[in-house]
Length: 590
Image (cartoon, rainbow, N blue to C red; front, side, top):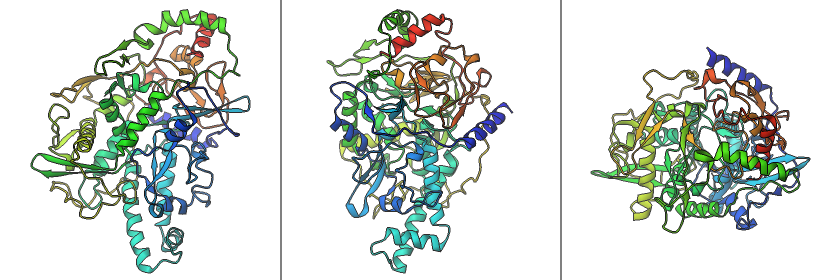
């Protein structure tokens, strides 16, 4: 009942909000070190990583809810940021690829990892910072916009005329286009319906693990013609704040739950391949015997370039025109070293698993009493479909007919990389985005016990209970029997080096605490709701909780498995007011 009451309250405050508040004016680019150049920034904003979402001509022909072109405001209504350098007039993080007559729109890292804040009427751009973009609303509206054009012959005729060259297409051309659009929409609508929760994640958050698990297991490994396994898809109810990207290559473990190994070039490629598969095309099929083809659209050269850019991207420096008390910050440094550094947020170097002449940082994975919901997702079990029996000795375990979605993800990532390195796989055709069409002479799908007709898409899904599911384990060993075997524990998350932490509000992994000042308040006394938007509070270091924008309600420590609990990280809460001020001043300098 507590979970239901929270969801109702959440829905009411979000519905009453007017949208994401965005700052006006040309941004001031925050200093992120001498290695980070304007050319690097432009590359980061548009670098293709292999994502294939939708054809550009289709996107330009769609209408928004108000009847205006879907792209009319540059998608700023969702929190996307303008990118005047994009030759297709798309915002930061959206790019195009392919021939001019059939360009495809894809998503790249910068969509979710570029921040813009407003202080004193000025805007400040922070590359690699967590975006305020509402990805759920964007994806839901895109699904609806395509659904609207397929809802009637009249609507589709107008869409076909806008898309086609010449502008008056033949009946046969319209029919062929209709088949392709229907194929795209069946897959995307199944994914949207099966993944997005009835109450949105809100700006600045998404359930990345749920998205990746559902995409690989729910839309890519089923029987033809749509390759869907709708029953594999589960509502993503463990949203996390987009992490900041500076220093991320230096961690020896990554992802919020720390279950992704990091710290060398191979692990970096695996990390980036996993997120790219969320919106790339992936068409795995058994080749013969125990061998599989992991055909995909991943741009591995693009992924390597993005990693090079992250190595150049420095943590943002506190802007010089923002106030700071240097003497007070020095006092705060002593408090930080005593309270926050040892064993948690210190920069402890290690050379294990990395190049001999390059160091990485130890990233502690520990339980500090915060929300536990994400661990439940790591326990999702799914039908493996076309990947049944897949495995790579010592790297990715053999997949059973039903297995953990996390094992399926690792198999997909390892297989895609191995195919690329050994030139064993085949690139997929451009299709129409979201894997909605296969290249000519595509390999025959393997015979499975699944029905050839996709299961009906669920129209509505009841919210999950916030209580821990019965028989849910407290720990999970992933990739057992391989060189990558490791054990995950409920409630454990990464503790990162805090350089640039001032630019990463709201705080905790699920974005449930608006400012660093609020994080120093005992959990029971923290705000039960706050506004989310671009206006920044330099005194309290974080979001201006009074700004116009969507309201985020959060739960207390009695609802630790809600996905939205503000509980935990009860450190520094017993400091005096003066000590807290000094600590905050020092955190601004990191």
